[in-house]
Each structure stands twice: as C-alpha cells, then as structure tokens.
Length: 220
Image (cartoon, rainbow, N blue to C red; front, side, top):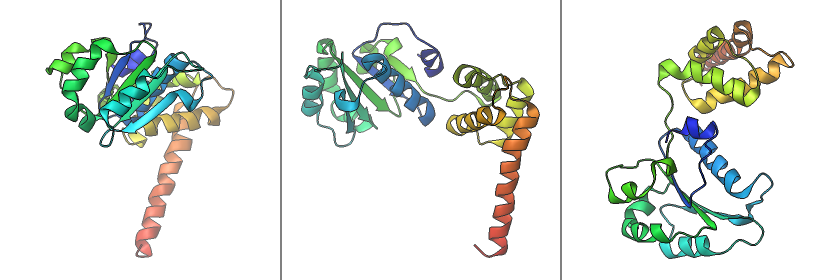
C-alpha cells in the first residue's frame, strides 16, 4: 500500500505487524506516527511504546516486549528502527512467529528496502506493507496543493504550488516546512497566492544566495 492513501485515512482494521519501507523519511515518520496513534489513541503516553535499533535488537527481547500485556493502553507498540539488519538476521524466526503475534501488540519494522519476492514478504498482507516513496517530480506540485488543503486548511493554487517546487529542494519534509510557514504567514486568508510564495520563500532563497556570496568573498 502506498503511504499517501494510508495517511489519507485507511479504514482497514489495524493488524499486529506493519512493514514501513522506502527512502522518503518524511512519509515514514508520518506513517509510523499514524500507526502509533491508531494503536494507542490520541492521549497515549510513551510507556506502551518501545523502540529498538535494528543492528542491535535481539529477537527474544523484542518479542518478550511485544508479548507483555499493556496496563493502561489497548496495545503495546514495538518499533524496530533501521530494521534491515534485524530482518536479515532473524528472517526465519519472523516467518515462524507471524502466525502467533499477540492481538495486544503492534510490531513496526522500519526498513529501507523490502524485497516482495521473499517468503516473509509474501506472508504479510499488502495492506500492512506501506511504501514510503516521494511522488515523481512532476506530481510534487499537486501533492503540495493536496497536502496544504488537508494539513493546513489552505488553498494552494497550481501556479503557487509550481513556484514552491521550483524554489525548494524536492524533499517532502522541506516542502512541508515551507507550507507551514506560508499558512502562518497568510493568517486568516483561505488561500496562499503565487505572490505569497514569491515574497516569503523566494526572498528567503535570495537572502541565502547573498549570504553564500558574502561567505565566498570572505574566504569562508
């Protein structure tokens, strides 16, 4: 499943295991946050969440934690960060454990690569395998408009969105930061216009360029 449809509001029942893979860090953070929110609710604290580094996590410890019944929250969430080495090392154990995952637990594997032709991948439902890849560059402007409307409740016309993607590096996290600044900048206005993007983002970029020239001039 692609990350953007998932974030738009997937209604599927929450399963016990999710694989979040890809190279778009912004989307991965959003997906993991959404999974934790769905598992624990709006007001949950961190006592029912455990995070392990993938290159140091030990299979038995991870699943002991996952099997521990939570006291105050509906589920216990266990996140394996940068889980590629964990999956490689414990692939066989994971295959055996999949059918016995506790209903009170949620295991999230944050991996960079995920080969769909492996036995383990085929055992996991497609809806539980969330692909975090940025839209193609020609579709980023459209994403900016959609994201701005959904996240910040502001209209971003096509010309303003196109200018934004021309001024900012094609990274979703950076674009999101600029959209947040723009939504604050326009205040109560329902639209972020081309001139707003040009004035706020364009001027900031021009200032950065002049700072670079000044640094070059001083030998820094």
